[in-house]
Length: 565
Image (cartoon, rainbow, N blue to C red; front, side, top):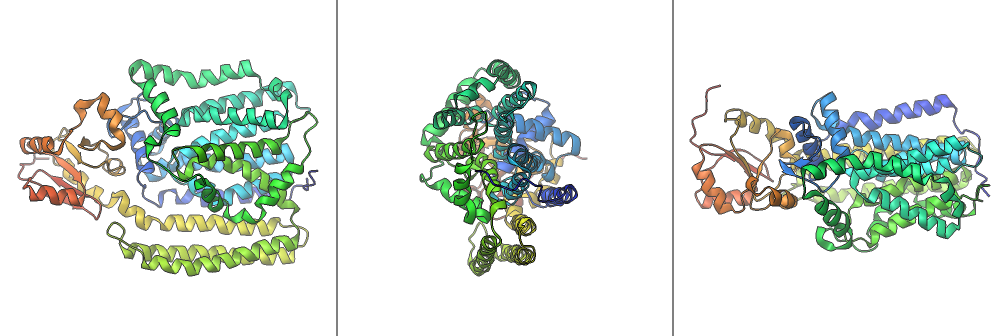
């Protein structure tokens, strides 16, 4: 049976203070790091182009049609730029908001579906899980998708509570259907396929056929299609090539074939989940065992079984996929947080003491392991960057270790309650991720190319507005955003292959053809790798370096009379 304490483990004032403290830690550092390639630069640039061009229907990246993903996040990032200006924290704001809202939602759901203690502990678990915390601070699509899938899951759980008035059930289910539509607009059919398949599997495993009578299928489907359909109709009207590429190539071939070149062993996501929920590994197995013993609700629905099926199916789905990225299994995180949140209040003081002591030892071992960072380095990331990052890692581990010791002290002084110790321990992990993540900008500053941007913009200002800017053999994912200018692809379209196929006049297929254009044009700029620059220099191609780092060289056509400003 579910013997989790039902009394609120913290008063409302304490909970409000924790939310405010988390909000400060969560949002303040958003602009302290440069954008990382490729995802952060790509999605920031797509939103910038949408904002400056005013085309809210046809997504473009670096000036080319880009139909790999739906536009919800691009829309919201573009609106953020419109409201707050173009910048790094603005590019991450939507992702951060969805991550933070996900913590609050899992707490609300835990409190309403199970009990107050479960809600508080589930929110603490999700906020401190490195998987959720770190992904909530990067401008990628998976956090937005995971949030809307979390809304889908949580609204389903909230709708299935026994003795709920019919109008309340209907509203929660309409929210469920609407959030699935927003998940589809976030990343495609995966937003409806995964929740739908998980529900079918739950029905078969739990033999809960009655739930289908409470889904409001007809009105729910109307809500779904009213939200999801308009953009697909409009973009197809303007771009007849859209449907085949989006649905066949991106939605099916992506997962069924190795075409995306993102391979990984079947156990790939096991490692991801182990690291992603590292603070709570010692209680994870017990949490699932406890959840399996929780009786069904009077109406026959089993929220714990739904959470387990949801997590297991999504994990296995992506494990079997030919395309694997670390962030793909993020939608599992809220479900796991609820399962762990159900069990944590049941821990005895001695059990939690052993849990904390084990992690204190872990931090000490990790500090010794961090010594090896000082020996790493290569041509792209020199050793001095690793040594600088090493300092941040030591500070992060030191803070986490200190708060774990505080948690041990609280646990010893407050028998019968682990909430204070849990908050201190979780705070250590939140700060560990924040400090180490902020310190990673020693690499991000270089990889972004942002330090070169002022010089490049100054050179662009001296040229005519229509002067071409080429990307020779390489797609730089961050420079277009920082210089506020798209580039003409040369030779290697990279992930813009579809875009150059439908608009071939917008690119240069070979370097030889580019050299001819470069020699004939009165002025221009070009970005390339150092090796490419050396090769072209050996061919006596006229180039004058205006900015460079270890990853890129930016040149202009020399000997040009600049117009007077």
